[in-house]
Image (cartoon, rainbow, N blue to C red):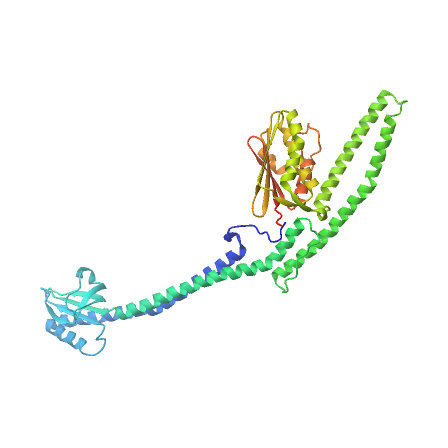
Length: 459
């Protein structure tokens, strides 16, 4: 498998992306809380101070009217406006019952007077210019009205400055979030990639691969060291298993062959009775079957160990599939079956043509054998930028969905009455895996679909 091949996935599935997102979200929340506190301590306090001042002046002037009447109130308003304190922000207006202006610096009463007893924001006119202000209205027994307010220009300016500050802070937080996504993702990928690359190679059979030191003593470096120690132990165990397999191959295969030769010699003895020859022939069949199982297990062990990987070469998968289909056409005609081939392009994979042909032949043979008379088998290949997908589908009886996950395990047979030992698909799985590929099964309703996926070789 190409070391640079990386699975395509949604960004949210990346740990680096999620960590950066959570970090950025935390930054944004922290900034919003901080800015909200600043806002409340500046604009909020400013509004509260202004509101208290308006309420205080309104109460003072109301008390003045109650104690001294309209003339006293007019004098107090003139005194308030002439004391050179808050003259640019104070808003005062006193009108009689007909709405005629008696005193103040507003040109006319604000609109919608009914809702102003508790104070509210209104547009008003002062010296011919429309302004926004906070105003409280008081209506006296004689029908006259007093309006006390404050110009909101300073507060609105402060509010605008703080709002722009919040927007700028949010923009900075967003930039930090985007930058954090990139930095976190790159840093995590840089640390994880050597581990992932090594494990990918080991899974493909290159058991001697080890994680390269990262040059720093962090959690990923410690993880890499642990993985290397684990791989060392696995290699020792696999070498032990391989040694046992070699020992069995030398110490068991030869005696079985000798037994088989002696039995065949005994079968040719003319002095043996018919019953003896029958028992000898049965023993020969049993030994041959045992030898076949033994050879199949050794073939699976060899494939899983990747022993023939050094002989891999660029192979045209289309050519291999075509040869297999040509070979089984005669078998298909005998049982009135049909094999169709749909191969696009000439995909090339790295592998052993004999092993690939053996794996595909096994699958086609199973499709014809279990499909029965008149079955249709379809072989189709699809090519992407870096992968080759071969699909083998038949319209036979198929297998139950709950049994799909058992396909490819050693000694599993769906029908115990049929000849075999359940090692055919296990050998196919081992050979496909040795080529860096993947095999999967699915129901074709009716029939069975087998998907073989190989990494594409790009010269």
